[in-house]
Length: 441
Ligand code: AVJ
Ligand code: FE
Image (cartoon, rainbow, N blue to C red):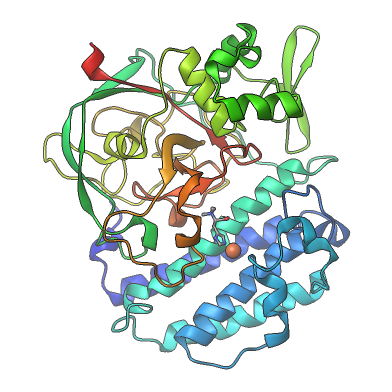
C-alpha cells in the first residue's frame, strides 16, 4: 500500500505537500470556473459567502501562513487582510464589501501560489513546529479543501441549471450485513500525537475508557428516515429537544433540506437536478436536532464522539488505534467516497474494503456524521498555530461531526479528524448513524 505519512521522510512530505496544494487548487479552479463570473460575486444564500470571497480568502490565508509566517516575507496586499478575515465580517455581510473582482481574486491567489511553491522548494521541513514535517503546507492545503467543500455547499444552494456533474459512485454493496455491531468496552487511544498534519484539536493522543455499545453498521438511510416522517416524527414533541422542536416549528421544517413532496413521493433537488429521493442512500442535509430526534424515535441515541472514533479506529486484535477504519494506508477510491469524485453519497453498505476492523461501514466519506458530543478540547490541548481555528469554537454551542462527506478531500479527512457546527445547521453535507449502550442487554 501507499506509505503512511506517519513515517514519511522530509522529501516524501515535500512531495506530498506539493501534491496536496496542487490538487486543492485544481478543485478551487473548477468550482470557480463552472459558473459565469457574475455568479461568483452573487450571494446564493445569506448562510454562505459569495464564491469570490472564498477564492481570495484561500489566497490570503496561504499568504499569511506560508509567505509571511513560514518565509518571513512582507505582506503582498496588507489592505485586503481585513476583507478576508472571517471573524471581522459575518458571511451575510460579505457581498457588500469592496471585494477583489473575480479576475483580480484569481490573479492574487495565483501570485501567492507561485511564491509559495518557491518557499516550499527552499524550506527545510524540520526544526520549528510550523515547518516540521511540512505542517504549515499541509494545514494550508487542508484549509483550501475545507473551503472547497464550503463552495460546493454554495453550489448546492444555488438556483438554476446544473453547473457541476460527476458520475454516480459505484454500487459496491454486499448483502447480509448485520443492522448493528457490538464495540467491546474498555480503553482505546483517541486522538493523535504522531500524525504529521493532524490539526490542533485532534491532539494529543490519550486514553479513553468507552463502555460497550452497539453502533449501526451503516449510516441511516433516506428510506429509514422517511419512516420517521411518515410516523409523524416532525409533529411529536416527545422525540425533540425543546429548542429543536421550536426551530422546526418556527421555520416550518418537516423533512431534510432540499426535499419536497410531489403527490405521493419525495423529490429532492441536488446540484440543479430534481430527482426522486433514493431510499438506499444515507440521509443528507439534516440538522443535529433532526438526527437526535430520529434516534430517540428509533429507541436509540447518537453515538458520542469517543464511541464513533473507537468504532472507526480500534483494532481489537492488536489493541491499537488505526489511522483510518481500514488500516494505515492512505484513502483510495476503493476505501471511501471522498474528494468530490461523485457528487452524492454511495448506497448504504457500499465500500466493503473501507470497513473498520469491527466491520462498521462508510465511517469515512459519504456523509458527515453528527455525534452526541459538544466540541471540546482533549486533555493537554494546545492551540496551534492560531486560536481562531478551533479554540474559539469550543463549548456547548457546537456539536461534533465525524468521518467526512463525499465533498471532503482525503487530505482533510482521517480517523481523528474533527468537524463541528451549530446544531441547527442543515445545508452542510450532514447525516448520522445511531447507537445504543450494551449494558442494557
Ligand atoms: C472546520 C469546517 C468548521 O469552515 O468554518 C475554514 C474550517 N476554518 N477556515 C469552517 C475553516 C477556517 C471550518 N470548519
Ligand atoms: Fe477559512
